Image 1 (spheres, rainbow, N blue to C red):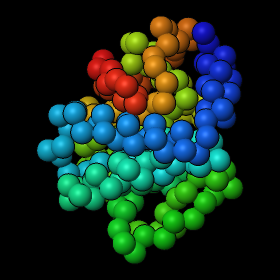
Image 2: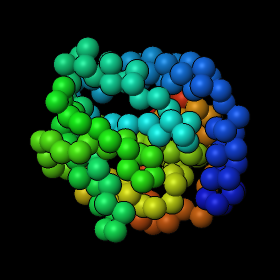
Image 3: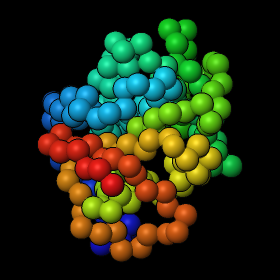
Image 4: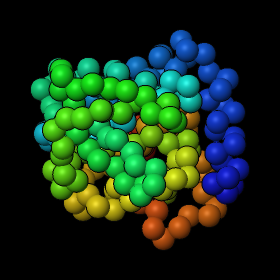
Length: 187
């Protein structure tokens, strides 16, 4: 399937999930993450979920990071430049939804890409080779291309892998892992 076809398919599948389904599946994903050999690092970039799009609820992962005394990094998106600016999430961080319903920090302590060790990545679909389909704006591909080569890239998905995404670009950044409620895929 193409990216356009996959976006349509997985938006429809997500819309069928209830709020309870989203929370239960998100908790299962968080529990699967505990199996990964990633917890020795310090800086973890995480997205704040867009509830209206029924994204994976990352509150459970944020609780794990807090419990393990890790630094959580969140982003603010600039839709003109397609750049993301990253901030340390602290007790004093003010979060506000932007025009696209994305929860973002209003301000804070900026963190440069080369500090980030692990990135949890939102997606709509992924395939068995580690390619992913997002919303199509290219924010994460640009961001990931600017991270250090050893940064661990982890997709989070409610659904299993597709066989193959037909129209992958050379600039698409592959995942190292994708975590679903039932399985951890390693690429």
